[in-house]
Length: 84
Image (cartoon, rainbow, N blue to C red; front, top):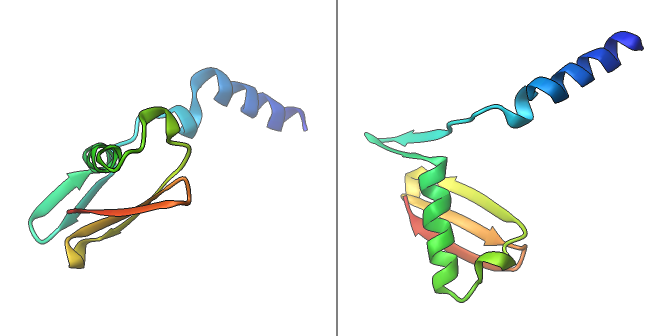
């Protein structure tokens, strides 16, 4: 038990996976987008539909490269899509 709590404490101090820098890239047919680009495009699209920046609670993203589309759901209520 002591070992487990020591590891948990060490992860909190050094960060662990939750705080590690991450770079996610989707590649399909000689095109690629990183997750930051996709999320920025989703944010702009949702805000153009009247959602205020402070109103974002959750963002679910579904990437369908074969359709060249990224579908999203904001706050389990607002649906939309952007081009990949």
